[in-house]
Image (cartoon, rainbow, N blue to C red):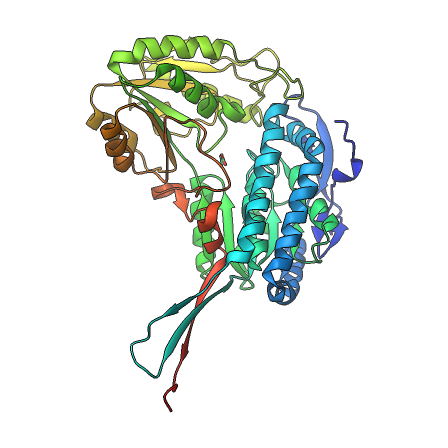
Length: 485
Ligand code: SIN
């Protein structure tokens, strides 16, 4: 890993505007999933350091929230500028710790930075309300004020953007943050802390520490000073966090698992559907919560779609993400690859056919060759569970009603996609899908302007967009009485 700015490789914990080691002196190795080699040793923090970070965020809150919105906006904008100026270094760091192709890492830095740009602008638009009062002697005024100290727990699949999507609106609205990145990918988050420091964001407003997940999580969820927890990760862990937050009745935003249907109707533009399927399914080697998880294909175009998709998958190139030609990097580790291989095995044992890929690559333990399974049924694990790997299961259906029923036959409700050129069908299906996000003739749905979030067990709250600010704001109602005296 060659960084132009070596100062972006940080391995300590950033608490109260200072870099520090773990109190115990312990560290954890960060492993490059492409090579299996350690690339850094990061401070392994626990309960004590988390308490320090919460105390720092709490001390910084009064001053930060009292600053004019325009001033907070300038700090967040500055962080955006610094991030874009460091795009190449941040992308190299991300590929080294996460494995994704370098072109995708560059894209993620721009995507991540776009949340800072967006929320720097939104900071200035936190409006209140006046409401007609029920009697002449009263006035009703509503203001919106920051929630307070926010805990941000982020995943390894988007180590930059999932953090900026949280700290952007938090800082813009006047909250302070304590962030815990995933153990596998702390370097991207620590680099953001370094840039926050360089942007001049006051000590204590942003705190980032990695380490013992259980201890840090317990300290964050049990603290009465932390007023909100925002989490991106699995539904299983999200449920545990919601339970843990109940003790102090914290607000939560949960971006959890998905099981996205990708429906192709007989009347679809098949070329566009294949482009969308590749983008949605194989981005980040299939490790996104919004990945197409089940491809529901109408029987009239099933064979043709499968043939065209196979030709497109054959063009994908598996390799180390640092190679500019790579389009499929490793999964996050060997266990992740094992779990995907087990799902493929479950499907083929029940009669599905592996038409391409689906084997561990010779390049390394964490690499899986991108795969397509045909003849998949709703009894197979690939239909029921989030695959989190480069495997496209194809399921045939006959009618529109059947497609909607199959699509909704899951406890998840994050992203969904469908391809059709019939305007009536487009409305019917879009309205029939129980999902927070519907891509219509489009495989890439994520951007800062749009509300990202799910229904059912995919979570609560929305990130990005103007709705994303609301998650960090409390409504305060003021009743002015006695005006006619
Ligand atoms: C996720 O997988 O959690 C986020 C994906 C995205 O923002 O597009």
